[in-house]
Length: 176
Ligand SMILES: Cc1cc2nc3c(=O)[nH]c(=O)nc-3n(C[C@H](O)[C@H](O)[C@H](O)COP(=O)(O)O)c2cc1C
Image (cartoon, rainbow, N blue to C red):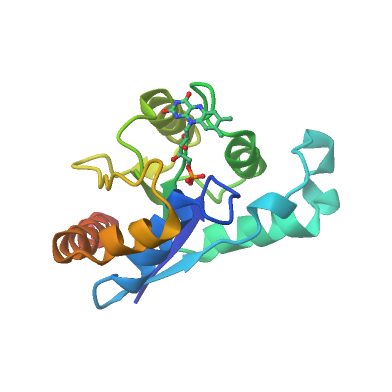
């Protein structure tokens, strides 16, 4: 069983990125289990002085969840042409450890825009030595949609198939 950690870069209750990850979890193919990390908003702001023995509990939880996983899937909005602070902060806690090194990772997209954030996130994660699966990224356009419509779009047969196939392709990448 591949254990995959899913991280949403949005803290909004009605987040389209979080909804996409929840739907990916619900549509994962056999042999893959997605768990959504729920602690992004509780992470203290990264400070290199607080590493090692002083690592805060929430950061330790994140580091352990990434380390235990076979791979990581990130869905993240763009704020002012950048990666939202909460997402970058979470990644910063993972930089000077082994958690990211060689760990398979994939970005999925809930917005057809966000091109700056996509590129920046991929660059940051590559620099951290995540093994990025960058072929045919999954994109389901949920930008600006309210939760009832988001649910309808994510329940469409074609989108459910696309989600299952994206996670299957990631699992094949992990296996290879
Ligand atoms: C403060 C702020 C800044 C934003 N800046 C951008 C931007 O530069 N480019 C873009 O494509 N979208 C931008 N957006 C739109 C969000 O990326 C978009 O609404 C996204 O779908 C929100 O994700 P969520 O539903 O998961 O919270 C911005 C939104 C906010 C709140």
